[in-house]
Image: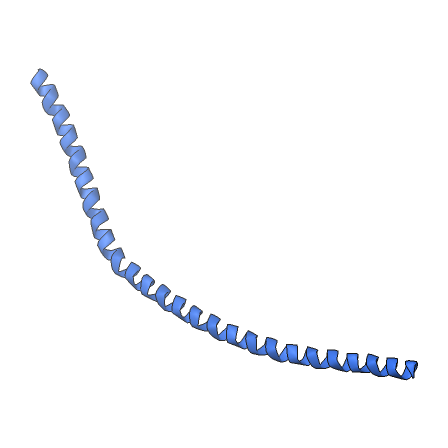
Length: 94
């Protein structure tokens, strides 16, 4: 009687292990399908990162060029204002 209970318990464990084995095999098959997709995504992300770095470098150059020309314009305007003030003071103090 005791051996029958042990055999039944072992049968239940064996069925659980069979189920677990089939689940593991299904997971392995799914992983095998997913690996190429993940590699493709990784390649696309690397390409997008490279493009983004290039775009950022070009944008930085463009901003630096705009900033330098804008500073030049501001310098000219300030110089005109200072010359105007100097001319006014010269006329008033003369």
